[in-house]
Length: 87
Image (cartoon, rainbow, N blue to C red; front, side):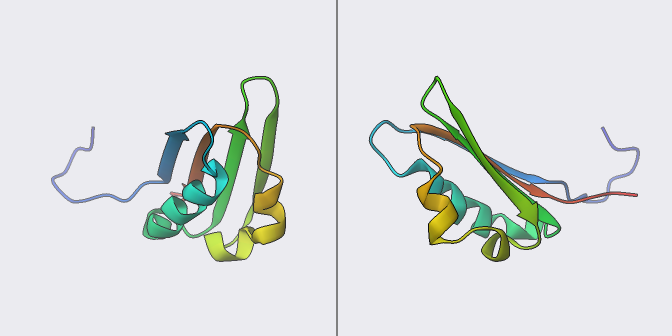
């Protein structure tokens, strides 16, 4: 994949499927742990299989998400992403 033998950083990504669980909150904590994989922006999408809910923004995970916007990310599955841009 890479022409040299050096370590490379890329975006962080996390997914969860858990019926009856607070998947947005679990995804927030996972992205917080993956923050070193991208510090420019973050986003979470959740779904119940019919409707998708999205929240994203520029900045660190702790700057993008708070209790208010996590409350509206409903569903039993979620995908989260932290952005690490390359030149």
